[in-house]
Image (cartoon, rainbow, N blue to C red; front, side):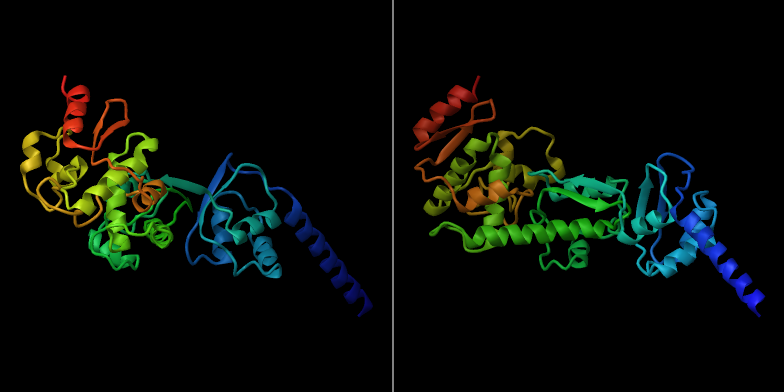
Length: 326
């Protein structure tokens, strides 16, 4: 019995040494960097077999034992991983249990239309495309939005995400971020603005975003539109006309286009258009709700990105002659 006990003890010690050796000995990478993808629902045994087939693991069983003994077997995170240097089994378990996955980025640009945003999402190679077959309305429903028109509802920013993430997550994060930013801006708005709801502020901010060529002009541009709304004047802003033209816009807006009535033509219809016309950034939101205190009612592009502001039509016509008519 003593011999059997000693033999078993020796075997246990040898096994412990072997496990310890494999647990803390760096494994050579099949390639540098070595990339692998863990699918949703993969068990530790499945992961071990996958990494064995990909020539990272030589001892799949030991890897499984280590995962179970360390309590990490049920903590595996899906996603795309990349190893740039050799790791041992314990380090590998730490990486995949903490979800230290590859990070990708998507930059959403201020002033983009929702159509441009959606195209950028659809074209991103690191996203799982679960919304491509959905209509805009279905997409909004999928992310829990209550609106029926997507324009302006998504905050322009740079979004980091794990490679292999669903595009639903990007849309949902951008939507929720805009909801938060808009609510904060609306809560701190200037008193007495001719805006009844946060959504109207979003519409105005989108127009300010599209009209601003130089950031220093942004508050003045907002001030002009607020003054026009207060006086019941037509907004007469070209970007709304262009938005209403849709795919018919060929890059040039002509005088005749200003007279073709659409629900977005602010030369033919009073007040704000029915929806935003772009994705406004935080600066445009702030300007719409904190416009410059000015008497200006008109502005015209100078040709260098900045605008010339005027208090009356005569002065505005002179500015048009100077900067626009050659």
